[in-house]
Image (cartoon, rainbow, N blue to C red; front, side, top):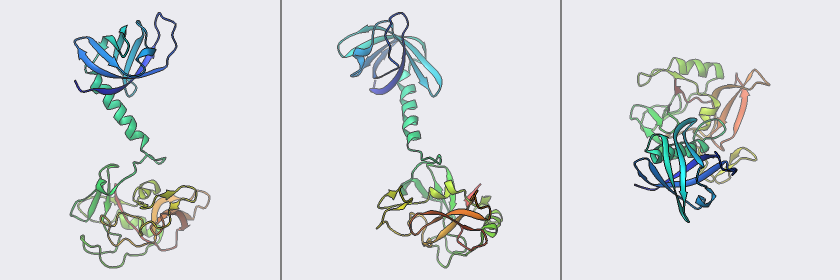
Length: 255
């Protein structure tokens, strides 16, 4: 069986030994017995109970029966005997969750985007579908021509009425719009812009060609100033806000 890294929650039963978590590896499973290896094996004692969780759901329960120099044996008391798979999946999900930003979206790379050939581009990691071109541009291949400038209210209505690829469209939230930001030289969180010398526009231009180096609207209203709305500058990646009656660019997203 292929070795898999595991995170096992440990509880003490009879033996008074305090340990909150044990990280080891399931080396082999034979019937109702699991062999565990890892550099923390020495922390285990016979009688310790190990719980393996899939998210918040208990997947399996094991009891340590013997501890050797570099490995331990545990009896599987209950649950799925394929505990290696169960915990491996859980740890992978945890790693993916850690990659999410504070807005709840994953950081993306160019290969995460798929040009659907119908004027739309799918962000496969975040499950978002975008207009390939900025609103007003022509030609699904090159996005030629000038992008229209619309005020915030008009931008929202335009997306709602937009007809493309048989889908329903809307204006993106600020969190969604920020997933398009690509800082080729890194992001400076102190001043909230792409580092100097990053490519412009600050978007994957192979996927979203001819994007204006300018401000794009989002649906998100600036709470302190109700007549202002947030958006993103694609010349330096800056999140900023403007009065809603000012005319800027629009890229719609599928509902």
